Image (cartoon, rainbow, N blue to C red):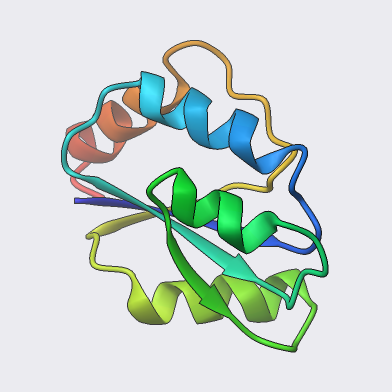
Length: 104
């Protein structure tokens, strides 16, 4: 399983675009975890509406939020992305292929 962890803080505009981009890849054995730093906008609600698992904390620091997301991740491979990430075509598939090819 692939776990994608996205730290957020007030990302209601950017997050839905990234989540939809990730979902278009079509990987079935995948979870998207949004680790939110107590956003004051609709970030958490939009993440839930888009099928993400959400964890929240009052701590607003990407490294803390990444670690908080990893605590609930179920995947053997964890990919960290920022909410403003724009993924090139086949990025996730290529990354998974390289992990498997190298037995990482």
